Length: 431
Ligand SMILES: Nc1ncnc2c1ncn2[C@@H]1O[C@H](COP(=O)(O)OP(=O)(O)O)[C@@H](O)[C@H]1O
Ligand SMILES: [Mg+2]
Image (cartoon, rainbow, N blue to C red; front, side, top):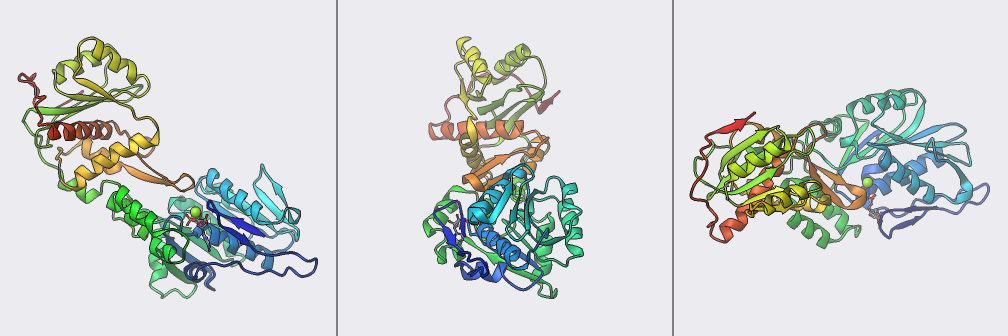
């Protein structure tokens, strides 16, 4: 039996003579064993990314199914969304010799030779987690599984008094896994067990390299690094800017002249947002409106008035930039939010500016949008994405991030692109 991770790692678990499974647990490092293979019914493991949570739990669930399974006994793997459940489904199939199971691709289960069924389920449909008796379960990336999914799963485990492994990266404090982990950590609950695995533990075991940790520390905002690699939950749900840092940058709107504008122009139902920074990095103009395309162009050129400006030129924004520049507004330059990398780059620049208190902004929509921002760790693809949660606008964040990018350039080159005459706009214009 082989359990393969995303890297080169393979576990040779066992050969199967007819009557003797000859099962042998593959090599796992101490913290994996201590956290996952403990005797407690509820084991909670808060761990670094790529520390072997998923691999360790695939081995555990396979072992439970082999040793304690039987005809029509159910074992569950639960992941936040179906794509993640699919990854585990595939990895588990690759783990077993082909003639030892049948896979049902549409219903996502594998049926072992002994009649045991291992299901791969998504937590975004909590209703599908009620019902059957389950003999062991894993909740992968538990901080991102809805509360309701845990309530549903727990009811399913009650009759069988089945063990469950709850694993994941930490993600703020407002989630059920965080609460369970703190309870387990007290040591007062006899059937609960808690282990934290940091990236340094994984590196000491040779599962990741120390270089990878050093790189991550350089690339990510401190808050993101601490959550993803040190398993230290942030106060505030993993906001990449940091709620306390955001609050410390709040100041009344500056009345100085702009040196750099960021414009996020509405594509569909969104808002057009323009934010300007003065020479010292303080927000000194803020506009937010919904208007026709033609009016929007007219208004933004009028307001920007020759000052250096960066505009979102992604997709149809490209035509906008073209139109601005051909009509003589060469003070506008484009920024393409093409793919995750450019978004990540510009948001990291903004995070640095906020965490170093290089900029200020007034209370209100800008702060609200910054505070709602999140990062999402896409484990399967080695990416961290920065975005507003679904349904929340991020036009102000985008506009501010562009203004900051341009402002840095301006301050490097002396900030001479300041127009002499500015249209009189005082305070915010929100329509
Ligand atoms: N016990 C182990 N021995 C060797 N390599 C391991 C072990 N556990 C994990 N790995 C390696 O680490 C990689 C990441 O493991 P994974 O379980 O996907 O991490 P996580 O779920 O914590 O992000 C795997 O692809 C594998 O290469
Ligand atoms: Mg994983």
